[in-house]
Structure formats: C-alpha cells, structure tokens
Amino acid sequence: MAHPQFAAELLQRAEKQGPITIGLAGAGQMGTDIVVQVALMPGMRIGAISEVRPQAATDAALLAGHDRSDIVHAGNAADIDRAIEVGKIAVTEDLHALASAGRIDVIIDATGNPNIGTLFALEVMKNGKHIVMLNVEADITIGRFLKEEARKAGVVYTGAAGDEPACTLEII
Image 1 (cartoon, rainbow, N blue to C red):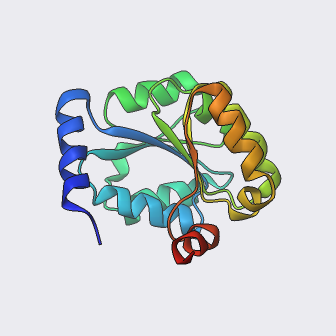
Image 2 (cartoon, rainbow, N blue to C red):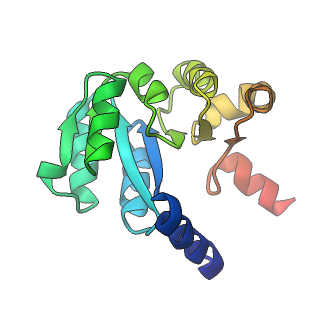
C-alpha cells in the first residue's frame, strides 16, 4: 500500500525540481514491472532503459502506456540526456551510457546477472549516482562491499522491498 505522505513528497519535489528520473538496467519481468509501476507514480519517471534486447525495453514502455513516439533509441550518454530533456524515454543497449548519463538521478539494476550487476553498480557509483539493486544474487554475495563503496562515493546503495533479502529483514 502506498503511503500518502510519500506520494505528497514526490509531488512536492517534482514541482520544485522536476520528477526523479530513473535509469533502468534490464527489461525482463522485474524491469517491466518497474516501468509499469513508475508510470503510475506522479513525481517519478523512467528516463532510460538499457537492455540487450531493445525491443523488450520498448515493449515495457508501451505496456506502461507510453506512446511509441515517446520512445527513442540512444547510442550514448549524450543521446540519453537529449531524450530526457525533451520528455522521451531513451532505449539503449549500452550499460555504460546509462551509468554516465547526466540526466539520470537513480539507477535500478534489474539485469538478473550477478556479475554484470556488480560491475555495473560500481560504475554507477563512480558516476555519482544512487543505485537500487533488484539483482538479489549480486546483493546477497557482495552487497556489503557495494554498500561500503556507495558510502565512499557519497551515494545510496539499497535493495528493494519485495525481493527475498528485503522480505527476510521485514520478518526479523
């Protein structure tokens, strides 16, 4: 259940600074769920999706109710930034471009690959961005290290409610 205060804070932030712009890595089941959910949340938006199967990213955006004309291909970080500036969703195959795009506020890793997720999280942090880890395999094996690296970089590293480690913590 959504917390009304959280929704109000998101709207207030959006009015002052614009919506929180999310970069999403992966458009499988979890990634698609994120795209759909964010479309229902005023104050947040998907700015870019990195996916090795670009059509999956496009399909996720379409499923969330975005118009095909609002989805553009981006070959590099500058393309991603230009798309975000005009209110489009950038689709890219380049994780490095997603990590370094200047208009992204926070990255969500939904790649499902622990090796890629770990290396990607480190790159995201080096670029001064916060990261939400949906990659439970990476989180349970190297999450403590990633949390420390985030602290050193001055960014937030967090899991997400709903995945096994987060649910376990809620029970304890």
